[in-house]
Image (cartoon, rainbow, N blue to C red; front, side, top):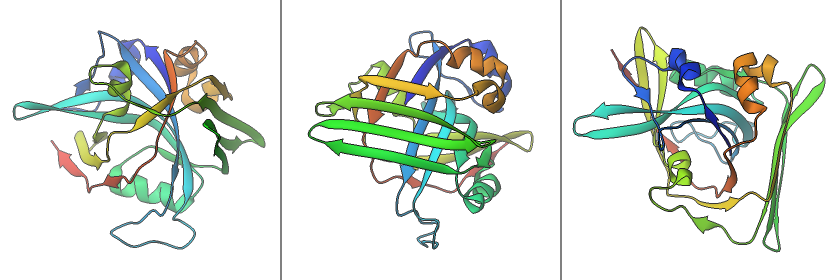
Length: 223
């Protein structure tokens, strides 16, 4: 996870109806996240050749009032996966902005050293996000920037003049603060020049999060 401070005015046009931007200490953030899906199932069904695959996404943080609580969630600017069927299903069932590109990954965890890299190919050129860390993963403390980035359990997407909402369930992750990190690619043609300006700045934080079982529930449409 590479996390950047961003001007809220940049994100305002992308916020779905019925939700609002979420802030941490009066700051808004976007994150580039690389992750690996393993043993993926849809309605308990595992589809051949579509169980294990990479994803890289650019996301920002929102919240929606529900009764007397806030549902803290994320919106995606763009999500990259290597499988066209995954991209189509995600657009159909969740309304997300997916694109399919050739991808690969490298993960090594040995002798308390962690190295992770996710790569995608556009126009015959490989682009990537890479990170390394050392030591043991540490718990995410309540009230911290790291908790704000990792502890969101809802997804929101603009749809039909309103928004769709779906719940995501996973245990709290531990994290490794990054020792080194690198983002390589043409961010302007991938995300737009306005986001490239942000992503070319130094990030506010960089860390690797432990994986876990994750369950994504069916979406609901809110007017």
